[in-house]
Image 1 (cartoon, protein in one colour):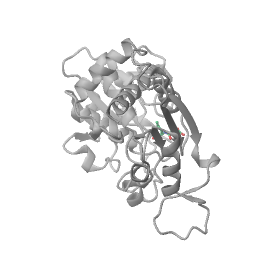
Image 2 (cartoon, protein in one colour):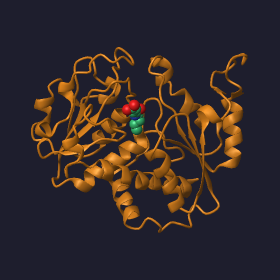
Image 3 (tube, rainbow, N blue to C red):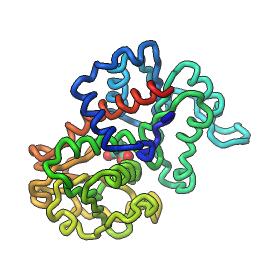
Image 4 (cartoon, helix red, strand yellow):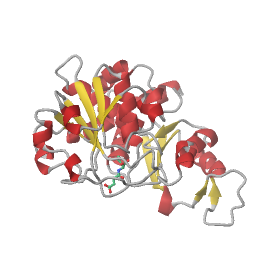
Amino acid sequence: MKHYTSINDIDDINSWIEEIKEIKANPLKNIELGKNKTIGLLFFNSSLRTRLSTQKAALNLGMNPIVMNVSGDAWGIEFEDGTIMNGTTAEHIKEAAAVVSQYCDVIAVRAFPTLTDKEKDESEHVIKSFVKFASVPIISMESATEHPLQGLTDAITISENSTKKRPKVVLSWAPHVKALPHAVANSFVQAMQKMDVEFVIANPEGYNLNSEITKNTAILYNQEEAFKDADFVYTKNWSSYDEYGKVLNTDPNWMITKEKIGTAKFMHCLPVRRNVIVEDAVLDSDGSLVIEQANNRTFAAQLVLKKILENN
Ligand code: SN0
């Protein structure tokens, strides 16, 4: 594996989960592996967990992380080929990626979708341009359509907390005031499709994710029916995919409550809007795994970095 930009880059999720559990038990075991290696973390968007856990993972491997908020602090980067750059962008990704590759042995990038231009978002032009024009491995820290470090984290968290051989996992849409990306949901779907779980998605009509990702996963428009006998309820808001980037529904009846999920464990990638996505009683209960999930971000990133350092 040279780059990690998708759950599809995972060859065997079960062996990755086992390796991550070993890393978690002994996080400093490979502190020499990344000695004198630099990782550059480039953020086009906000971050708390990704920014800190990826640095922590790098530090656990003895690497030196350097971090930049690209939008705002760097020159505006142009991604289109052949453009006459007489507008707001000051340098082309061809130069930017080549230059950063000289300072860094690995580059990690976060770049959200536009949510207005479906074709552009689906082309994954930012992350793919880094893959194309950088000379070092690229890690996605959430791209337009995928968040593979989060999906891997979620797979470990379910594996660690499962008391059954084949638990029932539900991905439920929940309301939000803003239009949010599909990336977290997409990578969660892809991760669950690789695991031995009973997996269903619950969302309102008009909110089906890309069918090329959901494939034959069952989609229910009735949340109550989906939650029956659930062991894990993974919640996320996303904007409409068909009516691309639109907020069609803010129905509070889709908010997650203690009463609805019963004894099922609650999961969310964070940040989460209390009493919009999920009520306080769920987040403040022992059934919430959100803090544990965030902790696992470090170890998921650490395995990805370890594999990249070992193979490149
Ligand atoms: C991002 C998303 O993809 O939905 C990042 C999640 C890791 N979340 C948000 O943008 C939430 C923003 C908000 O205002 O609640």
